[in-house]
Each structure stands twice: as C-alpha cells, then as structure tokens.
Image 1: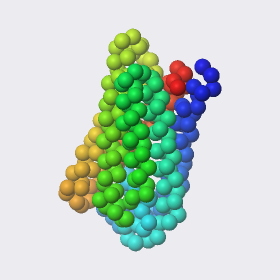
Image 2: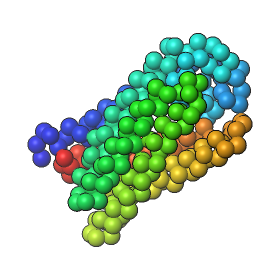
Image 3: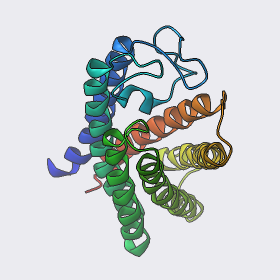
Image 4: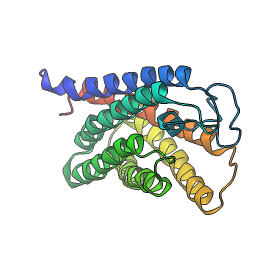
Length: 225
C-alpha cells in the first residue's frame, strides 16, 4: 500500500485522541456552571455543552481562561481530524459521490473550527451561525456517505464487513446529529433550560467519534488515499 496510504487514517486517530485528552483536561479545569444551573460545581458531562468550555467566563461570571485555552485547542484538533476523515471516507466511496462527500465534509470541518472562537457569550448570533455552518454540511456529507457505503455493501460487500459496520455507525451518527440539530434550533426559538440538549450532544459526539475511528481503520486496511 505504501506509506502515504497510512498517513490520513493515522491523522484521524491522532486528532480524535488529542480532542478527547484536551477536552478532559478542559473539563477538569472548568470552574462550574451550566445554562440550567449557574452554580453547578465543576463540569457536568451530561449537563454542560462542549462549547461551555470555550466561554471566557462561566455562567456565574467566574474567569474560565485556563479551560478555554484547552477547549479551543481540542476543537482545533477535532476540526483537523475531520479533514482526513472526510478525505478517507470519500476515497472509500470513490467517484463523484466521494468527491461531493469531501466537499461538504471539509465545509463542516471549517465550521467546527469556528465554534471554538465564537462562544455564545462573545456573540450569540455568530455562535449559532457557526454551529449550523458546521452541522448542516456535516449532516449532508454523512447522509451521502452512509447512503454510498450501504450501496457498496449491497453491491458485493459482506454484511459483516468493516465498511458495512462503519455505515451503521454513520447512520447512528446521522440520526443523533439530526435530532441534536433540530433540538438546538428549537432551543434557539424557545429560550430556556433544555436539560436534555447537552446530553443529546454528547451521545451524538460519541457516535461520531466511534464512526471516525472505524473509518480510519477501514481506510488503513484498504489503503484509501
């Protein structure tokens, strides 16, 4: 396969691992507070959003500089991991479909990077725009990618093949991501405490991370460039 075939999949795994480590460090440094409870102690996995870590101050006005720097770095790592991820996924699909998936995926990666630098405290409108710039192209890329992966499976892939398994993880990510985006849009239209929204965000993120890791391993095994 040659060395170049292993670089992109390895970058996916390195970027996702860095995201997880940096996010954990940011969460440990977070002073506390959620949108529903400004006085909540520390970071609540199911109660805080990822972007809470990027705020310059917490909901109760406490300085959040240390956690913010780590969280911004984690978002950068994740957005950079998305670049080889969508590139490898496009290579596995091939043809015009693979190219289209790459285009939408790279737009999503750019939007993900913006989220870290535009927290809601700085600008609610720009933060919301950056979230949808990341989400909508990402969902389109996921829909096309999952459809293409299942189509390849029906065309000869074994039902137990790794590509087929990655398609199911992608479908789960699509379902959770779509639900999260819809709930987020509802939360914008109806402000208040939406206690299930951060939990849904975490479930969607965990699904995407699992999908990215699986695609990286499939790409490495098949020599996707």
